[in-house]
Image 1 (cartoon, each protein chain N blue to C red):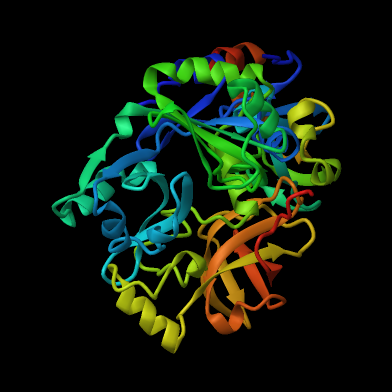
Image 2: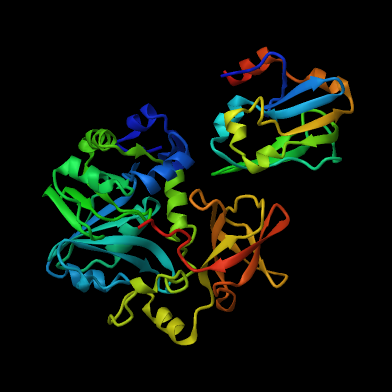
Length: 356
Length: 125
């Protein structure tokens, strides 16, 4: 099974390794609760080298991406990034990704690990003259440094102030070494892309600067508290980004992109379901997990796509696609756990509000 | 890894402390380390009757739910409410304040099929 350039570091740090989309990745080191808390209150470091990177270059690169992705690339200045998604012709989400504009005519796409080969095929299938596309996933290692103390780590690592705005790119000498103020935790932080052979040194430098090694377990509870969707769980090829609550990252004024017609129709006629945040209100309820049945008015209406006992909040949190009429905050529902139903309520996203 | 000599063990990592006709049941230090941070525990209701090997309780970590099997059959005579309020006791004191339930042992001969400390230590080593 493939592993990242940081495999030895994970083992040395006591990482408990699991299979994640075909990669050997650490689910935890010291413990998910301690790692989660470190990111909310101090700073943690995650290996995200398994994620995929594509370079897109050429005079027509921006227009080409605008013809394929949901968000408007033309809105990006050089040095900025945006969240976007790629859809099938039915409007279903193939993948969610971040588009970084490095130069006027040069972009970096960062995609989910499980989708690298499929995204590459999809992009090549839509390829046009004048645009160069390269899957450079195996060239890059990457770590994410996240938490309120990330700016201190950034300063120590690069002797530069961390940009205070999100979605900014800092080039560290070349476009092979990038610090990006993006993340998947809801905290301040940055993602640091670098050539493979520099990963171990970067990892240790981040730890020496105060970051606690954090695994996929904490990454999942942190992102769920923010209602950030996970592809393959909360996003699927059967649901549109409008159903997933990602309308902000869809520009329907663009001339065309795959799936646009379906989205326009949904905009006019309404969406069949909405990815909804649900919190457990019952006392002593077990943790909620994915694929637990959701009930309302005595009927099973859906199942959870993600779920956890929120480490920050102490109660069960979940997301589920609910019929729009049952997705308003305050709507009582029930979540079934091992044959018993527990009271829950629809609430506004996100579950967790970042400390000021 | 601590494996107290005075307990009997199951293959599925429960321990039982026998005092008279009553057994106190919990999970081993090895089990709690494998499960990692335990965030939920549901001990059985008093008066429930189980056969040996039945699922008698559930504990859940952040990532997974795990069934707890009773090492012997009998009636539940006590449940540890402290672990409902503070499930982390199962991590911090699995052989002590992290016990899960007490059972009136219906058939003491069932204890013979359980492992002693040496056999359990061999299993997890």
